[in-house]
Image 1 (cartoon, one colour):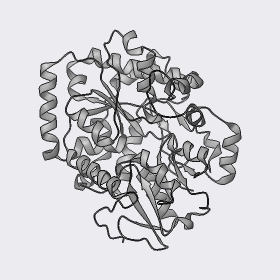
Image 2 (cartoon, helix red, strand yellow):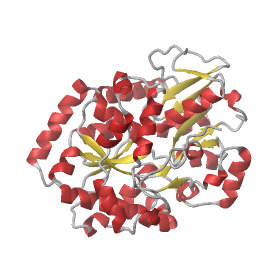
Image 3 (cartoon, helix red, strand yellow):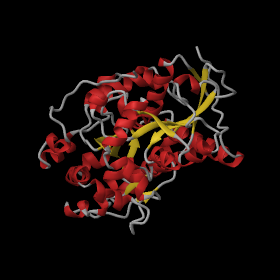
Image 4 (tube, helix red, strand yellow):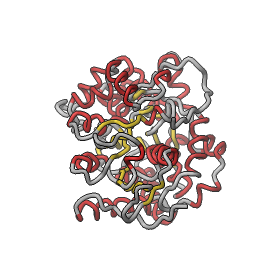
Length: 408
C-alpha cells in the first residue's frame, strides 16, 4: 500500500511551486463547508441584489470551453433573447470556482469530478446541466519514453486530483504494475504525481523537470508541434466517449429562472451542434489572432485537436496511443447529454482513486443518487430535441448507454 504525505510540488521554480501550492490549498478550502460558506453567502446576496443577471460565463482557455465561447461569438444567447456579458477568462480552477460560488459568474465549465467535490464536499448549490464536450485529453510524455516501465522513477503532472485525468492515469499506472507517490524521490517502481496548472506543464516537460503530463488540449498538441513530447495515450481510448468538463450552473437559477436557464442551455447545445459541422471555422474563432482573443493558442495547434486526420490516427494506432481504433473516437467531440451511467461510473472510480484533500464524503456517496441529484437533465433534453435529437450529435442510441473503461 502506498503511503501518502502532503503534496510536494517541486517541479518548477520556488516561486511557481509556492504559487501552485497556494492555489491548491485555496481550492481545497473552497470545497469544504466552512471554506465555501463566505462565498456562498456573497453569492446569495449578489443574486438577491440582481435577480435578472445576464449570462456571465467563466472559463479557462482550453478547448474544453469551446461551446461556451462559440455560443458567445455566434450570438446564440442573444438569439434566445438573453443579455450576455463578454466571457471572463480565468487562470486557474481555484479562481473560476471562487467566482462561481460568489456569484460573479453564473455559467462555467468545470471538471466533472470537481462538481462532485463541490456539491458534496462543500454543499455548494450547483448543478450539472450538460456535458460541455467529450474526450479532449491525452497523456503526453517525453520522446524517449517507450514503455510504461520507462515512467518508473519519474514525475508526471495532473491538472487536479478531482479529474478524469487523475482517474485514468492511476488506472494505467496500476495496470503497468507501478505505484504512485506524491512526495520524495520515486523508485523505479514508482511514479510521482504532482498537480500543475496546464500552462506550467509544457515548460516543465520541455526542460525535463517532468516526464509527462495528462491534461486537456491543446497542450498535448503543442508538445507534439514543438517536438518536446509525444501523445502516449488518449483518455478517450481508455474511457469511451467520456465527458471531462461539464456545464455547471447555480441551482437557484434553475429553480427560480427556468425559462432563462432553458435559453442558456439552448445556446450551448446549439453551439455544440454548430461546432460539429464547422470545425475549421471553430479553429479560426478560438485562435489567438482572432479579434475576440478567447485563447492564446495558435490556429495550427488548435487544428491538430479539432480537425480530424486519418493519417495521424493511423500513426497513433501504430504507436499505441490509440488501441481501440474500432471505437472511432474523435480527438475532441461535442455531445451534450449527461448520461446517468457515466456519473455513476465516475463515482465508483473516484472511490478507488487516490485524491488529496477532504475526501471522506466520497465513501458514503451512492452513485445512483449522485446521478439524480447532481445532474439536472431537463433543460438539455429539450435543447437536444430542438436540434433534431441525439442524431445531430452522432448518437444512434437513446438516452441510456453502457460505460466502457478499458486500459488495454
